[in-house]
Image (cartoon, rainbow, N blue to C red; front, side):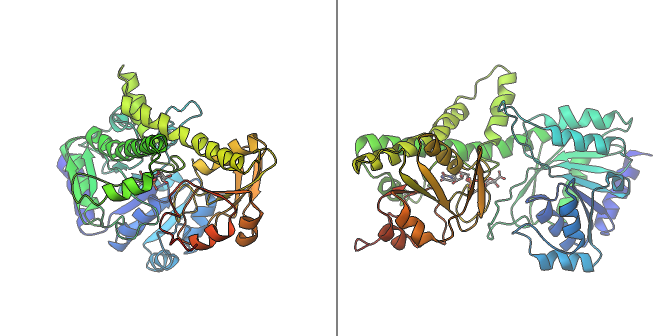
Length: 434
Ligand code: SAJ
């Protein structure tokens, strides 16, 4: 089959919307992506190892807050969306977007085992005309060094028979102003034909596709974006430590600096760095550079500062109790908010878990309240959310505000709590009669 026929056939199927798209990993990235391809009139099949997720999709039900159930139900009714755990469906697909998790191992090294497993599933079903786009955040070189050789082993040729690209996800869970559809999408192809086909597919569903010269550039763009956040959060956490030494209110300093209309971007100090992206993605970059005998000093330093913050805040609880003549041991401490950031229900890498663990280690009687998190596992501890917030506030010898959910009435918290350690500056706007 000549190069033009594979590419042209695929471009034609994209143009007339007869292309059948597969999304491997229908989570907080994959399901919104499936929804926008479906909205563009393309038939989409979600592939996942989770039978529950597959069943939910096939029942017309969403499990991702950013995708309303009526959107899934309508796509099902229109015959544009289905899901399966059976990877044999790959043979019927024209394009496949890979949206699987890329966590860290216990050794804090990258774990791309999910990418490799999926690539193996694709490799022995690869056929002429296939387009594969990796979206999972990973270190520069993964697409070309890990995926490409496994696909080439089929005997097919990239850019001639099949097409391969990298396009980083930019999903910010819970955000409604910037969505999968209107957030510019970076696209780097292994060959020009790979870029051309991947761009044609994504432009059916996404307002702006930004082509770059290679998958490595695209992989690095994503890591720059999230390293930028991790380093600036580390900086502002260190500014908090400096203001503590200087006897200054760090929140007043930052709020005032943020009045500068140019040349400054506001980040706020906090309990540490949570979520499954920002604490992890920069370590993918520093690991890759370590393989090249280079030390990514800013990443390592930011990681050091950010991971130290839970211990700093536990010391503040100890100081607050000490001022009241109470040892931590046996004192009652309420953690307010345990999700990794405001108004989400995700506790992955949440610094709240470290804070609870450290307090428990010091013998405190620790409990928590979070309107979005009914229960949480902290090491060997399984904790249930306090059912009555007022009682919990009055019960505690010290309240530590860890996640400043919008649902909280901070005036009430300040009134009912005996003493508060505020890791988010949540109380800084309260009027003084509180
Ligand atoms: N945090 C601070 N201070 C800040 C900002 C964040 O302490 O000024 C903390 C948060 O509390 C949280 C952690 O850092 O624990 C990460 O917060 P985040 O909002 O940066 O991270 P995510 O993982 O919710 O989402 C980010 C996206 N965030 C934004 O763009 C605002 C975006 O970078 C990516 O789309 C996403 O990670 C991803 O998938 O990489």
